[in-house]
Image (cartoon, rainbow, N blue to C red; front, side, top):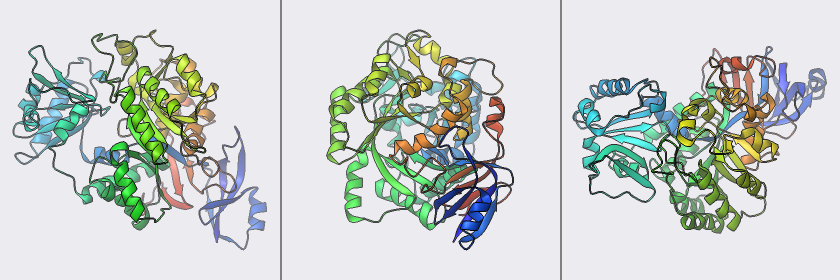
Length: 537
């Protein structure tokens, strides 16, 4: 028995502007689309329920192609520093949180961003000491490629003026060679290694909160990388299975597997053959560089505002190629984080040297700074570029100060990539950016910081509404080679839908971020409905 969805505007996303009157679904699959009365007559004995859309607008389910879902849930649970508008405000928030903690308990903050402050000076370990008192402290920058630690944390990790930089990381020091408290990329691990391990219950709560929040904003699924950071591969993976299958929370999940736990995955899967309806293991995740905000994205030229550095290579060229080669030996595709053009070049070399097996696609994540030669080489390999349009809203104009306005040919070149015929998928990188896909769509079509801004930073790279929505529908499906059954409303496709209160094709662009979600449907099941309980678990 199935369901008839009707009485709204239903965009198939097969072609621009294409709509149908109704959709019939059964057992989680779209069985037919077309005129309402024809479907009602044809399937009258199979229709168990009629879902009245009440004039709302249905799209294929929006899927976030790059996020850290447990980390998103953690951000909802932890001290949020993203709204701090100055160093002083950040320190005040930390001090207030410290007052709530027991002596010696870790003080953890998330999301500070000095580029949003008028005075962009960053707190030192000494300044953090004044507000954290008897607590080890770590405060992650919004990019997660940099953190601040107080003296308590540095001492725990035995970080001092004599400590060398770890591979793939930087301990920032002052003119006296003393650590400032700033740790870049893999240097953060020196401190986080001393944090108490999280419990299984903590991870489950964070995952449930993250999924519930995604459903509220219209996401039916996400591609996420979490398996190397919590309770180990086995427990973390089994938490994903439990939450999506046994707790009744339907949400499509594609799990990237960090290269450090691929061995654990192989051992686990050799003993556990059970397939999941909602959780898929996918590509090997690799980081090739850091972030622009922390100046650890790897550029081919020095940073304009700090010529002493051109970023951080997490792996050498040879190490990166070795990791890609290892992935191929396990039959895996790869998903590689590359923000700077030199990091992207390293990745291309590796993918060219060790191509995936037939039928697979790799993905390069972020791809924010490119050159024409890199774009032309990209067209020759089976790859999807996993982009985050919302970065335009959060990174400009400060990114121009860091890299130079005319230094590179292509900054955040989404339109150029699509015009060159390169597949692109759309994500948020939550918790780095807000998870709401409408914010990403708005940034893609306006290249502005938000509805209140009048400045378009890279207008030549603006997408149409159709192109922007496709990033989160067909593009996300292409990233996992599932474009034949995901990303469209068509016969044989999964019955996953995002239903909005307004038509994104007909409203003003600056109204997009404020459009409400009527319902989120996963596997033919309404998992979120406005004005009703937001979750089934």
